[in-house]
Image 1 (cartoon, rainbow, N blue to C red):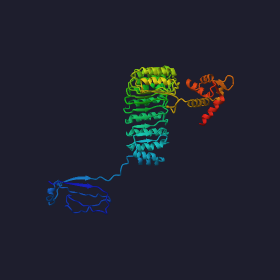
Image 2 (cartoon, rainbow, N blue to C red):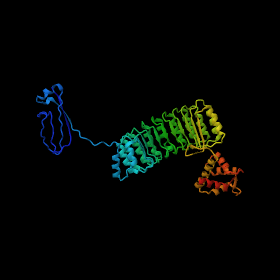
Image 3 (tube, helix red, strand yellow):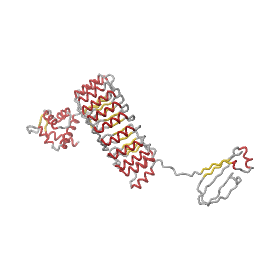
Image 4 (cartoon, one colour):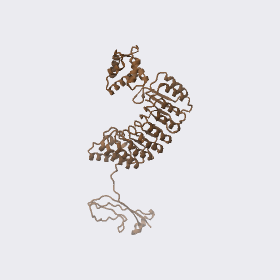
Length: 502
């Protein structure tokens, strides 16, 4: 039996073009044309093509009338479609028009050809955030979105939450410094419950409080993919520490956690450190700028003795003294993973820093590569102790001394010390609403407008000027230009004016 395939391709056709060729249709002979009944202005151009099952039988097949059994009919009514805009650019432009927002050429460009959209401090506001969110529901390319400092508000975070819940393309999201508060915490809770593709989430400076930790900690704890979380510069404290303890100990994905610049104290440090004892995934933990003191440092030292995965611990400016510092140092004898320990901007006297280096020298299996003592300023002889440690552990790096820009170390030159001291004095006077001459008169018992180096140093200490003892000593010596052992008020004012002009 000869088999024929009939292919019908549908196209729009006006009644003025009835030239349809039919081949192999039942009731029609091959090659003959037929008039078609037009019932509307739109009809199909049909190409009915008979395909013989065997070429050798084609001649005989043409001499026989065709039956239904001789034909195999395949109908294709597809129409040409408008290309789908997978970038979301058209949706973004239309949304901006409806919301009365000026479209961003930067965003339009990035929607087309980039995996990253960085709009930090871009002033999007709630409407601009909505327009971008609509586009990102469609876009399947962008994987990283930075909306830091855009004043997105409650409406903006709602749009972000809905977009993230529907789109699983984004893996990195930064919504820091938008001050979204408790409403935002609830939105983030919903977002993390619906989305399982996020790997990095930054929420610094959102004005979250202890009550918001109920929503956030549990959501982060249960998320199977979230590896990097930033909750710095918020208002979490000891009341929420138990929630963070559970989050840290139970989570199986987190590798980097930033809880710096919050309000944790001793009890908060104890619970958070307890979570670190049990966690076997977090490698980088930042708890700096929390006033945990020596007692809090001791709790982290206990965690370091049993934790086997943590590689970086930041306890910068945590009001740690020599007792807590030495506990951290001795814990490294049992730790097999920590390579970076940051304890700068704490009150660590030089003699204890020297003792710490001597202890580390006696640890043959020491893994530590960087000990950061930034803004702990020591005398030149401290370098000899560093060299002794390097003789045993050549890989180790000890950072110490004056630093600017939060960690960029500078040499302890006289000019650096003098500049820092003068700036510190100026800021101290401004904050305490006292003039420089009034402050100096407190030191000057004989009203000579000149004081000894010792009187000057003692006066700064008693006034509470925030300089370390060593820096106060170095500052006083720098002010004594002629080396007579006196600090003259007029010379100090002149140097301060010179410093302001440079």
